[in-house]
Image (cartoon, rainbow, N blue to C red; front, side, top):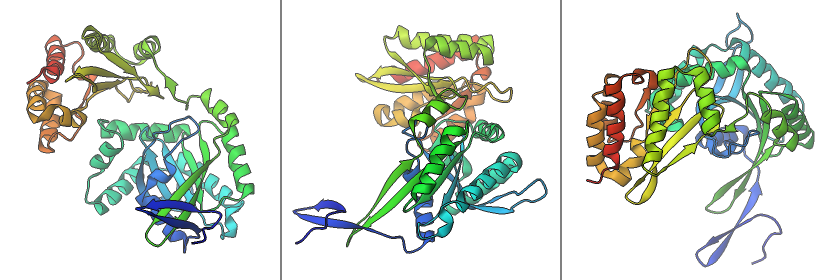
Length: 384
């Protein structure tokens, strides 16, 4: 068999399957692939998050053209990432002549109007439609995207990002023209906190296989430097920086509870994993059955008065390690904290496949509730 000079060579048993680059039959096929598999465009961003995940809000998302012009434009896809950043996606095949310059003006038009006029209720309603089509609830989809986050807090973060212009604009094509690549790189180096990226998504097919190969455009060293100095960039938190930030946005009682939980981890000879993100975060790792495991995490949230610090318990992650009995034992203690009762019941109903969360303000300063929380963590660590 004569093999082509270019392509993907897939070993299948003792044979070799050859996958050749093929054009998409239609733009709709490429759009459908993105809606089903957003991982194609959820990779590295300018700020370096290489574990990003995306949630599809809606295909053909209506964008207002002004305060009195709701639904004036139609965006190919609207996603949101785990940090509540709206991701606007326009898809074009390379055979479409509009892919060179017209699509850039179109995208900037969408972004400018979305940031100024998009009502949060429109995004929430659109996700509700998408969730219904998947036989799920919006809360379940948000949970999959960001385990443990409170849906109301999540939407407030989305709204905050929109108002601040913290959005990601992504151009997707089977082949990105060089002219468009240069425009993307230029815009991404100049714009902040907004990001502008391109994803070239080539398709390789064979008799039984289809392989998609994405290539990111726009993450230049200049763009990384531009974003790293701005408010949109993530950062590596540590003890001093975390508590300095927490003291500026949380009550003294909340900060004292954070310190108590950090001390609890360290007193057991285990470790704190300091977060890397826009908002100050950390997670408590303990040794369970001779292996380290994340048990809880804390996020001090942003500086907006409408947001609050919260704690997440990783029941879903711990279930395979601990089993139902140990999770149940800790959960019964946590039910003594009224704001956690319903969330514990929901987690129990799901077979402990959820991540119960709690606002620190609902516990901080109450000695009994704080002790219940610490004791419940101890129940998770105690061998049956």
